[in-house]
Amino acid sequence: MARYFFDSGDRDDVMKDEIGVECNGIEDARRAGIEGLMDLTREFLRDVDGQQLFVEIRDESGDKLAKLTLSLQTQPVIKDLGRCHYAKPNPSKRNMAGR
Image (cartoon, rainbow, N blue to C red; front, side, top):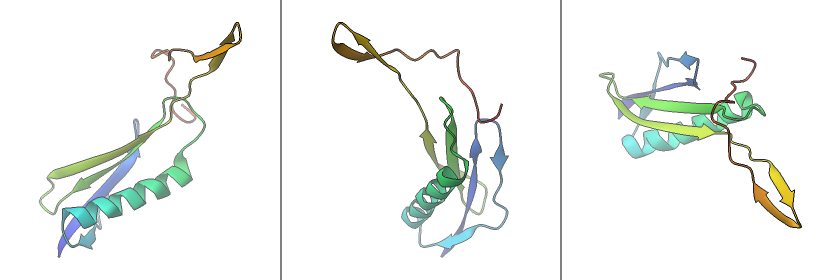
């Protein structure tokens, strides 16, 4: 079994994993990363358009093996003459939780 490290955060903050977890290869590490991303989402994802969370997987030598990301994007619905369509996102209006 090899030890993998799961760094996590958002666009502004990174939490380095200094302990790691032993996994039976990259597929097990990827599954552990997905579980970690789900936990991170429950704890830190806020209703802020453009927020992005990630988990990055490293091996024992520090090589980055994968990056798992989840982002929150909202598009308001505009009603026009009985039809609905989505407004185009404005890339200049990106906010992070509480920032």
